[in-house]
Image (tube, rainbow, N blue to C red; front, side, top):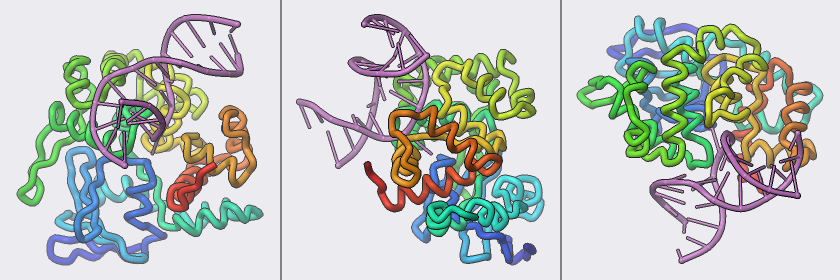
Length: 290
DNA sequence: CTGCAGGCCGGCG
DNA sequence: CGCCGGCCTGCA
C-alpha cells in the first residue's frame, strides 16, 4: 500500500481488498451516505471525508495526509492482512468460500465504542433507514457542527454531550421506545458505572456481560458494539439474517440462537466477526429466506 | 388497514 | 429457566 497526494485528494494504491459499497453497506455503520456518483461521505469523530474505491485503489477526496494518518488509516482498517483472514476462513469450508466471494472487499471499520453502543441500541427491532435517521437527528441535536466543503455535518455527541438530553428529546429524534435506553446508557457511561476504557481491555465474554448491564443491550447489541467499536473480533452477532444463513448453510436451528453462538464461536474462533460479515453480506445480497 | 423491521424486556408456566 | 407477547414509529 502506498499513498499519493493529488491536488486536495489522497490516492491510496495497492490496498488489500477494500470495497466501499461492501464495507459501508454490510450493516456495521450508519453514518455513510451514498452519493450520486456512488462515492460515500461519512463523519468520523470530528472529521468528514468522501471515499470511492476502485479495485485496489482508494480515493479520499478533500482529505489531508495528516487526517489520513490520524483518523482514516486506522478507521478503515487498512493495515490488516485480509487475504490471510479469508484464506483461513475458506479453508475446508466451501460455504464460506462462496460467501467470501460476494464480499471480498469488506473491511471491519474500527469505530468508536460509545457510538456503536448507542447506534445498536437504536437498531433493535428497527429498519436501517430509520436507524440512520435517528442517529442523524441525535447528532444534529447534540453533536457539534462541522463545515466541510461548504456543507454542514454533525459529530456524534460524546457521553457528556448526550447525557444532558431527556428521554423526550430522544423520542423527538424518532427513537421510540428506545429513548429510555439511550438515556440510561448515557448516564451509566458518563457517570462511570460502565467504564468503556476498562471494557476495551476485557475479553469478549467479560465485556459483553458488562455492556448487557445497560438496559436495551442484549447479546446481539453487545456483540455488534464490541465487534465494530471494540475490536473484539471473535464476536459473532446473530441477527435475523445470520439466523437464516446459518440455518441455510450449516443447518442450525432458527430458534436456538444460543446454539448458533456456540457453533460460530467454536468454528470461527478469533475470525468470528469477519465470518459474520461475509455471511451477512451474502445473505442480504442473495435475499436468503427460510 | 394490517403487518413488520438487524431485539429486548418482563411476566408467566 | 425457556417461552412468548408487546413495543415506538414509519412504511409497504
